[in-house]
Length: 248
Ligand code: TMP
Ligand code: ASP
Image 1 (tube, rainbow, N blue to C red):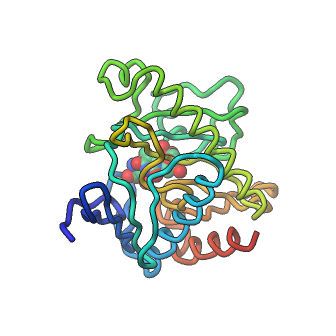
Image 2: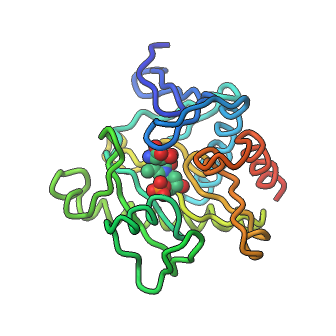
């Protein structure tokens, strides 16, 4: 199969004119690729988790590019024209939101405390660039100016992302897991329909916190933060997460 390109964790091949094959590797990177490693089984766990959530999204009426998983680490998807904007939804303050706040680059919504774990009532959406060397936050004005999405598309994507938050959040709360934030990507089909692309609900692209620990004032991450912060074994955290989700 012709090789196309590699992302942080996935290799992409051309399966046919209108289909791609994602190979989920054991690679993990953070801080714009400055920190790198490999963890056994990571590719398989993230592929199976993405498959698990894509199927649920489809059942919930959210259109996605998912087709099938021919092997435990690969996924066949519809080839799309990727919207050059990543969409981030936050239910709690964490990560780059706090870093940017501390650097004076962003204001927090009214009443949100500047600390990890502070709830963001009603949640908030943010956008970043997708095809620049570093993911840079962008506002709606810049998205419109660059023609990356129309006003109507931004509204639609916002609505879909809120719905994805609800679907992920309700599945996770049954597993006593808090969805702190997540990132999604969208693409256009040849008819111009915008559908969910890349992956969804994996610990590479979401922050998941153990709810019981959180209620005791402790943030126990079951996601890539264990690697970003160097606080634990990534395979163990990802494995625990997937086991807990599948049980409910
Ligand atoms: P952030 O706090 O680094 O902005 O990340 C917010 C959420 O989005 C977090 O769950 C990680 C995810 N994310 C990605 O998966 N890829 C990215 O390139 C970015 C910027 C965020
Ligand atoms: N852009 C961030 C980084 O490269 C996202 C992540 O950690 O997943 O660190």
